[in-house]
Every structure is written in C-alpha cells, then in structure tokens.
Length: 183
Image 1 (cartoon, rainbow, N blue to C red):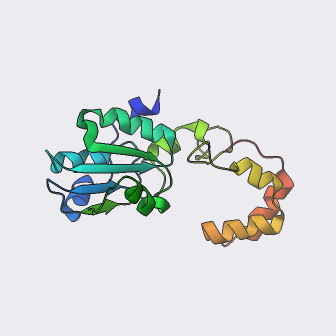
Image 2 (spheres, rainbow, N blue to C red; image 1 turned 120 degrees about the vertical axis):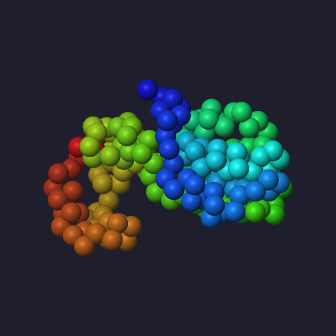
C-alpha cells in the first residue's frame, strides 16, 4: 500500500489543540515545518478558509507526495517544499512568504515512516538498515554502523540517543558486523 493511500486515514496527534494554540484564523500565512501526511496542514487550511496560505516543508519525498494528494483541494493556497525545516527562514524568504501568523513543528518520526519496513526505522519490521528521511540524504544507518569506529559509534549513541550503554552497544555492533537489516 502506498504512503499516500495510508495517509488518508492518518489522524495527527493533538489536532484540535494545535489549531487552537496557533489561534488559526482566515487571512493568514501559516507554515507547517514537518508536513508529513498533511493532517495538521489540512486542519489549518480548513480553519483559516477561505483566503489563508500554507507553506508545507518536509524532507521526506513520500510524505510530500501523500500531503500533495491530501491537500489537492486547497489548490494554490498550499506551497510544498522538499527540504529540511532548519532552512524555514530561507524557504519563506525565497517564496516571499512573510510575515507569517504561525509556525508548526511536529517533531519526530511519523507512524507512516515507522510502519513502512522499507524505510529502515522500525525494529519490528524487516527492512534495510536505512533510517533516512530522504533518499537524497547522505549515509544510511548501515553505512554508519559498518564503517565507524567503536568510539565514533559510542559517541553517536551517546550524543544523539543519550544512551547510557553506548560503549557496550558500540562494542556489540562492531562484533556483529556487517549489519544490513533492521532486525
């Protein structure tokens, strides 16, 4: 099943609370920095009808495809950007999308990414050890665990995962090389 089809039934977390907290209203410009399947964006566009605009950013091309399908009815009110939300200022400036009334960051993995074994994010589904949001990103997780030194792996696990057992896990990764799948 494609991500776009799966997204139609996907309900974003805290949807009502997000729209209320952002004080969404007509006539504004809104930015969804982590567009995903477009659920929050759809609620923002509905609550800000008929004349607001939304800039939707996501690094994941599959998520953007799903959001394009979900948000097609809003036409030119939506601008899609494939990129990293860290560049939100640049994206807004490049498109003359300022000032804005609200910005949403829904950080973390989506259930769609975790549920697709081919993406390599879940240990519950067999798949390649990838873990990239976009195929255009650099190294896969497999390349990292199979090429980095024990010390580098331990530092990565500690710095990005706050893993207390980082040294022990890194040692075990080195012992089990080569690693190619999530399981």
